Amino acid sequence: MALDMVAARRAASIPQVTDSLKVALVVGTILNLINQGDALLALGAVDWGKGVLTYFVPFAVATYSAYR
Image 1 (cartoon, rainbow, N blue to C red):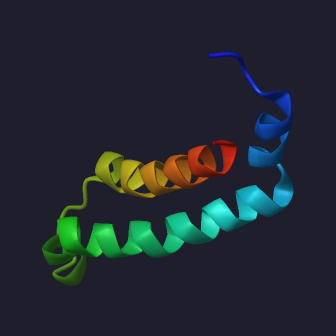
Image 2: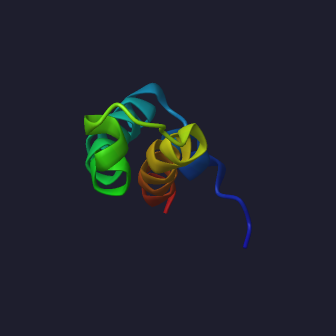
């Protein structure tokens, strides 16, 4: 599949990155509460690697969706 430069620029544009960050913030927070809610509410040990991935995956999906 050839890289569509127009679509790639659109996906990497400031408005799209801002929209993807908003999606990642909302979806990532919900997923993080589901996955690590007990540790967060009880101030227990939080797995920071899972936390980072929990926010990165929705960001990547939203950005990829804009690319397509």
